[in-house]
Each structure stands twice: as structure tokens, then as C-alpha cells.
Image (cartoon, rainbow, N blue to C red):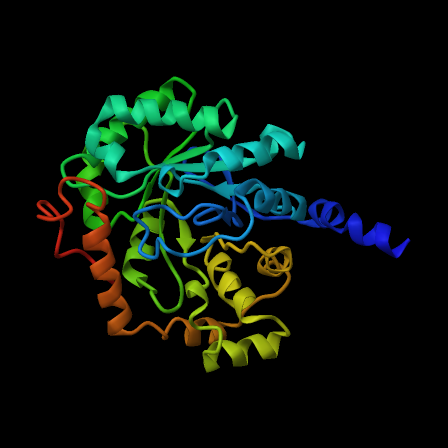
Length: 325
């Protein structure tokens, strides 16, 4: 009997996992919890640590993800694992309207232009084995190319292949460059958000503009699990450091997108909706950002905006003076 209950645990958890949503400017509800698929089963060739080893296949991991109860999946062309994600979606038995699939177009395709973008969206639909993508993002604002990329996504939106259009890694300045050319307003912007890279002015700006924010690297790649401020807050709430970091996001209305290949961690990471951080907790966490972490962000922005494009060496057009905080 006990074995039977343990075997049924993922199904029971899925039935009990209630994830709040936040409404986007187009009226669509967006789950506040997602699962990141970067380096799940596949490590991209141009990743900064491309020699990293993977454990299980993408489909094996995503099977657990969906059994645990996650329904929002954060995917991308760059991740190179859409076939595995699609196989898991096809096999899971979850109705399509209960899933929220995010995808992103990578820099090389943005640079190549509208025909390449259209072909990539069609490829993603085929590999993911779905008829539409809930939210499709421009992964980075490639100089001189991202506006045309967005216009192409607007056309695909009109055809029903994309339900919502969003941005990723856009600075305030990138967004303001795009804004005059927009017909279908972007609904979101995804970038690194955690207490150690807490760009308060940028976050406030985009939230005032009505964009839902996605946080990646919410858990700081595990580098700060021993931070004394986090440890003390976690202990006081009877939670883990990972749960405190996730709660810090969702308490601000920011979509939290953790990732782990371990089922127990998937369950742990999702446990962010049954407690509340105090105002003092939020203040303490909001003061952990350092000049060094902002400098690290600046370097990544300037490199990744043109990564895998002919502009990578010259960095022509890359903005070197943006709003960093």
C-alpha cells in the first residue's frame, strides 16, 4: 500500500499544485511559476560551459516536471532540446489548454531575418508537437535586427501561431528603441532577477509599462545557498534558501522559473506559495546587490546581445551605456 502511494505521489502533487497567475496586458493569464529547460538533456555548443555533462534525457526530465505539476515550460531555440520537450508534452496526457509554452528565437535567426524567423517558428511548432505557442520571445535585442524580428512575430501572431509576443534581456533603452514600431504590444520581458542582481529601476520601469517580468537565474545558479542573510530568513520561515529566493520573486509579481533535473528539487522549488516574506525580509534581500554583480551583468549583456552573429567580434551597434540598475 505504501509503495502504491509513493508511486502515485507525482499525480497527487500535480492535482494539489495550485499556481497563481498574473494577467498580461492582452488579458491572458500567465502562471507565476514555470520550469526552465536550459541545459536539460542538451548543452548548447556555444554555451559558456559547453563541456558540462547532462544526466537524463530531456524527455525523461520533463516527464517528471509535468508529473510534479508544472504547467508552464520555458523553452528556446538556443537550448536545442525542443524534440525532447515535445515528446514529453505528447506523452503527458495534460490537455493543451492547461499548458503554457514559452519559446524564444535565437540571435543567429534574428540576424538572418524574417524568412529565417518564420521557418524557426514552424520548426518549433513541429518539434514541440503543438499547434500554437503561448508566448514567443525575442531572446536578445540584436542590434539593427530586433525590430524587424518583432514585426515578423507580429505577423505570426496574426496567423494564430503565436498567442502572445514578449521580449527577453531587453534594457529600457532597447525597449524604447522598439516601442515606436510596435503594433501588437509586448506582454513580457525575461532577464536575470534575484537579490544579487536586483535592478530596481529597470524592474519598476517595465512593470509600470505593464510588462510581466520573468526571472531567470532566480537561484543564482546555486552560488549563494550559504549566504547568511538567506540562511537566516529561510530558517525563520522553516523553508529552504531556494524557496526564499523563489518567494522573493513571486511576492513582487515576477514569474519564477527554476530548473532542476531532480524530482525532489522540482517539488521543493515549487513550494513558494504557502508563506509570506516580511517587509524586513524583502528589504534585507533587496540590499544584496553589489557593484561587482552589476559589472558582471554589463559584460554578459554586451557579449550576449551579438552572440552567434557576425557582429560578435566587432560588437558594432551594441549599447554600452544603458540603465544598469
